[in-house]
Image 1 (cartoon, one colour):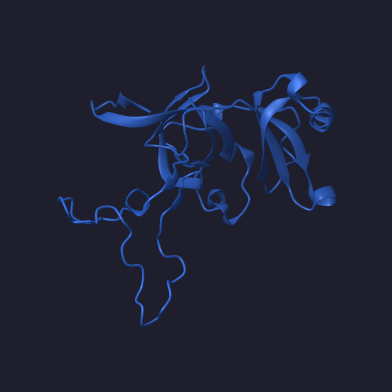
Image 2 (cartoon, helix red, strand yellow):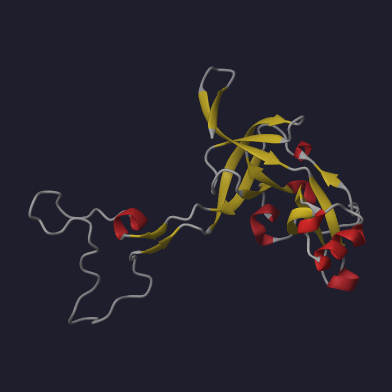
Length: 216
């Protein structure tokens, strides 16, 4: 993350995302696969690190080996060809986007950090500082309700953030400056897509509304 200044001199917090270029590795159609989709690849990979099945997969489409693959559902994939490159030019400054990624893993954490428990008194001798405390009555219902917030594994989950905006676009370096914080560590893989009913997962969208990138 960093910050930039807008035309009115206000500091805007942004996250720099290297969005693409992404290559169309495979197309899927209704006749053979039962649905329309394209498979996008991101970041080149050394051929010696690619196993034979994947090497044949890339060879079939005559595209170089790529490290990350992700399938995008479409209404129609007829206008896209295998080997086609999708760039950061799909997005415009000021456009609203939806970003999906994997949050940072925090390991096993207690209730105070994981769920925001208030905890007990901090004074000496209170004997109750950061413990969970009571989790249910003994007489009734004589059990703990399902879903009760308890200590456990924190982070490392799929997170989607909506309502973000593209503040600036750098086509020469394939960079998007998106207002706000995004899930995951530096260098983590993200999916950036345009907002809208279809983009939120209710129905398929077209690939110009989606691309794969990483936090720069």
